[in-house]
Image (cartoon, rainbow, N blue to C red; front, side, top):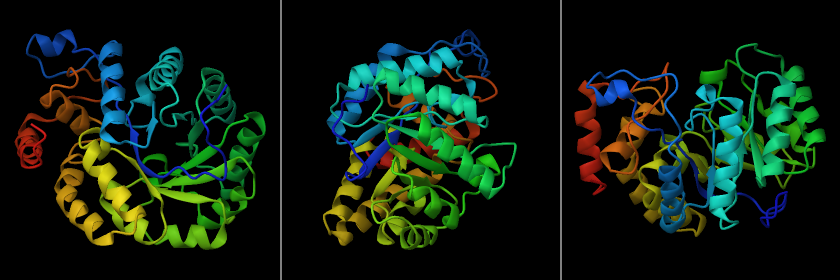
Length: 314
């Protein structure tokens, strides 16, 4: 069961990485074909090294098997094993917030229960995707999950991917449920932060889900980020968040300006292809990625490599 000292009253803050799931290079790639494969294996030794690197670099928490962790292409068994492995490797040094969402309520409940048994400190639960439920449907979905598991739940709103937009008024209703403690907000509208905080329970928190908007969102009351860019530049993202939380807005702004080109380049192909390619260029992981995702387009890598060099990452 969860044993990390995290509760409703202790907000998740700072830079929380939505960590990639490293995979071995596919035979197609090794043979010179830029394709991917359907069954490339998880690279457990690389995942262990990434976790240790993140903790050393100041990352405040780790989200395994979110979107960036390729949850959509892992089997259920792999999904749960990545959570178990992450919890065991982290050893309570930072919170582990397991990605356990699904478009079927019972699936999300199953993943969440298993994550709790594995020792996750909290669950990150995305809005149901594809089936486009009503606001009431989403309210009941999250309320039912909250009844079933004993750890805090962080909502995840990312309408560009899910076609379901969890509106501030619905978030406010959910914030009255004791175990629903915060939201990763990735609607693309930074003003949502102040709307959510104004309407919600006073203990409820907001985390940025859009790296390029994190500083703006923190200016409006967000207490950190669940970040893609932290995969590649963990120390810089952590320092930016910590500077803002400490009241040093000027330093946070300087670091944000430094990071903006990285935020841009990590989304010129669908996530997580650029993040995984960046880590491959940095020597942190192999090039493995699962279909239907592909390695980053060759004609876009020049810009990525130039950005990594400018930040001293390679």
